Amino acid sequence: MTAERLAHIFEHPEMRGLESALTETLRNPTLVIESRTDPSTELNYRFYLGTKVGDKWLCVVVKYARQDAFVLTAYLTDRPKRGEQIWPIK
Image 1 (spheres, one colour):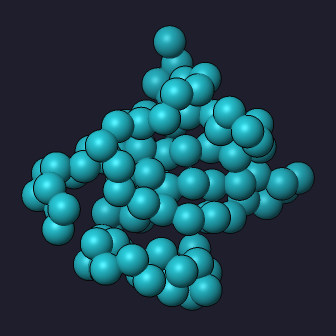
Image 2 (image 1 turned 60 degrees about the vertical axis):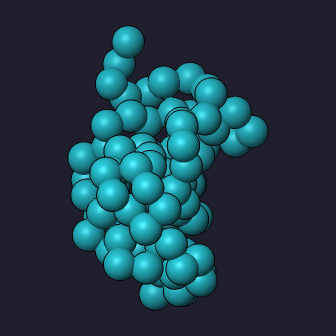
Image 3 (image 1 turned 45 degrees about the horizontal axis):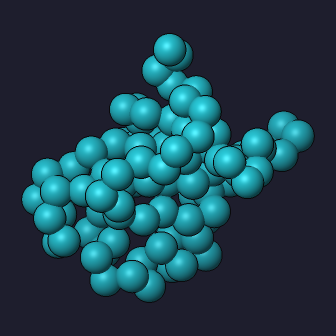
């Protein structure tokens, strides 16, 4: 994850202090959903208790292009978005 992307994510005060959670979510997501608007983008989710805004899902959005991948953004949410579940495989 680039410094520029981290700066973008941490512009949101509720995301500050979640550096290790971002890494954990990327390395070991509980759920991965394919974006409904861009099939080359995946939404990686993991649930966290006691964030600054309560118990939430952390979503780390990753774009895949050719032989590269990069984080677009990350955010906290009440529930995962709808879409095709990639992981765990149904």
